[in-house]
Amino acid sequence: MIKKNKIVAIQADRLDSMNIKTDTTLLLALEAQKRGFRIFCYETKNLSFINGKVYALSKEVTFNINAKNFYTIKNIKKLDLSKVNYILMRQNPPFNMNYITATFLLEKISKKVRIINDPTSVRNIPEKLHSIEFLKLMPPTIFTKDIKEIEKFKKKYKKIVVKPTHGYGGKNILFIDSNLNRNKMSKYIKKHDYVMVQKFLSQIKYGDKRVF
Image (cartoon, rainbow, N blue to C red; front, side):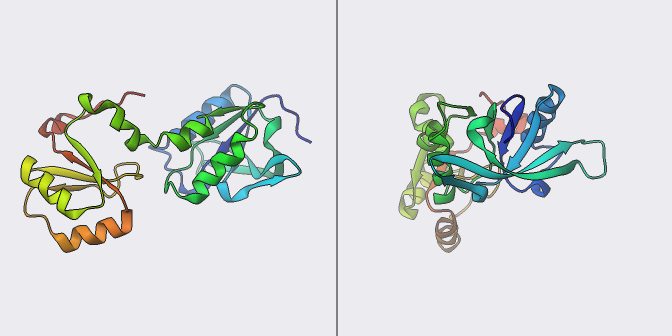
């Protein structure tokens, strides 16, 4: 059994899907590695609950962004996640049942190991939906699957932005400043389900700032 000292387990997407220029997960792993932690990576599909314990079939990885291949797999182990120091939840959406199941499994060991971010909070506070609590600080915003509501919103604010509610990384965002194409919007909603619709702010051309 791997000893608890100095281990960080990272729940993420496939290693070869990481973008070394933009992926914060890689930066976190490099910093942990610099501080002497062993790094184990696994995907949500590798989680199992057996005999009261949560295991992950994990790859022990060494990262080096200056090498041709930025990571090296040292070995593969069935890791008892309650025995590690930290678990980083870093996988990208979709926020589907696979994602939610992972939060329930990690919740079982949340009192034994530090999980960042807390799986209960990750499940209960989806990023975009949680913004409903801060409407006074935001441009006019609605969440809907109703094309008629989007049309009414577009008529009122002229220029709008439509985003998948559980999207990430600026992907699949629509800017609409002309007539709304009902057929196109219908296909978009069918693909992405609930959408977040906001009044377009022209100041975006000056860049944005993120608050965590």
